Image (tube, helix red, strand yellow):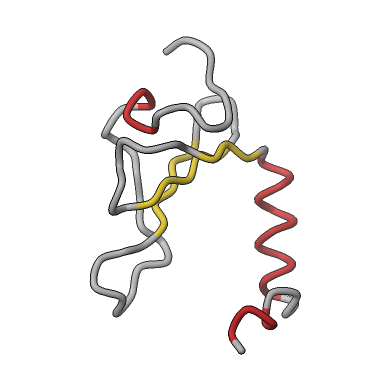
Length: 78
C-alpha cells in the first residue's frame, strides 16, 4: 500500500473496510472509519470518500472514545 500518512487521499487506502459506526438521521453525512493493518485507524468524511484521511494511532482512538464516554466533548452539543 505504500506509506500511510495523515491527510493522504482516503481513496489510496482502498474502498473495502470502511465502516459507519456513528451514522444516524443526518442525511447520510457521517464519519467513516477503517482499522489499518498496523492497528492505526483512518477516518474520512462519507460525503467526500476521496478526500483526506485523518490517521490516528490506536492509543489516540482509545483516549478519544474514553473521553467522549466521560463527557469531555459534551460542550460540542450545546
